[in-house]
Image (cartoon, rainbow, N blue to C red; front, side, top):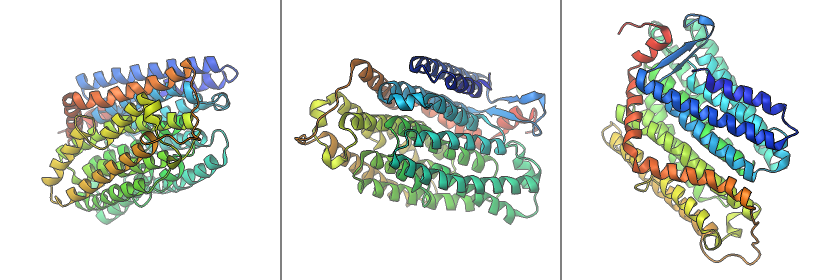
Length: 496
């Protein structure tokens, strides 16, 4: 069953390429595949909660020699939430996407992207993680350029150029790692690395992985590709990226720096701490300066990547658990906000924020959905961002760097200001006389508002019913800091 999150989108994508002549069949196939993927992801989540980490070795080759997949609590949580977000976005696409993009492979490419993301969450091997990164990169570049508009192509080039640099560094680091220890299996690496006599070499490798995953997750100062590219494709593509892509990089960083590079944690923590703080502050400052709604949201996304990596930098059970909870919140909440921005773009034909206004009077339901997302991303109670942010505060005050809390406070205040700016310019005030809104047909409106509403309910629900999510996140953090169960599942027997 563990291979199904990869096989379902793979076979769906192959089928969809043969169904290019029928938009209806593409939609039906894509929705059925996404529902099946979500069902499998939830089943695996239940299985992991009952049996602990589970593993699969392809071809019965023993680990670390063969290809292995392992799913622990962190991976199961990310897989389920990622699948949920993908299902919402693909449903939204049916109402918002033009026929040309549907015909030329949007659904198939979305399934390939989902396959790459799923593979990243369940792989037990750092080289296969590289392979899944490349799958997501290829699918996301084509999705970003789909339609061939000039802004899209320019954004796509910026996106792919820096990610190719990241992939090159990743490949070099993987090669050096294998040459030095002879294995790339996550469960086997810690023991081999600990036996290396030259710890400075391990430190250099760790820094290379920080750069690689820092580019993927949009950490300072390597985040500029994200706001330069996320506002160019249709809203449904931006929402898919916002929900999934950066979280793959953060996931890889959590896996690597709690399990593999643990010989000199103080140095890594210091580097990640500085990068996290600068990401929070510069991302939030960038959001304030924007005139385009989706660029504003992209900078907020960047800023909040800093919150998650800050949890890794503090490296306590409480900070890691809070950061994992924040990751779940961030995936759902940013997807909600980007879908709202997609509806705004669809209604107003892509005008900048200062050309808009008064949408709350004529589209009050859309305004409510945006406000819910804005409250949540600002960390206001009782929404989903409040509890993990409080948890991060507590972990920071208990750490050796309590002064970092001021950066978190400043970033939170700037996020609120950015959301207020978006609200005032898009939804509040008088409506410009020359602003004509596009009327949506009932079917299109249903396809766009239904998944957005479900995400808004999820944002509220995960704040109101925070206890089970927090409990799962903290249990996942404990599993990361004490990976005996992961190693036993992957290697088939480890002495404690």
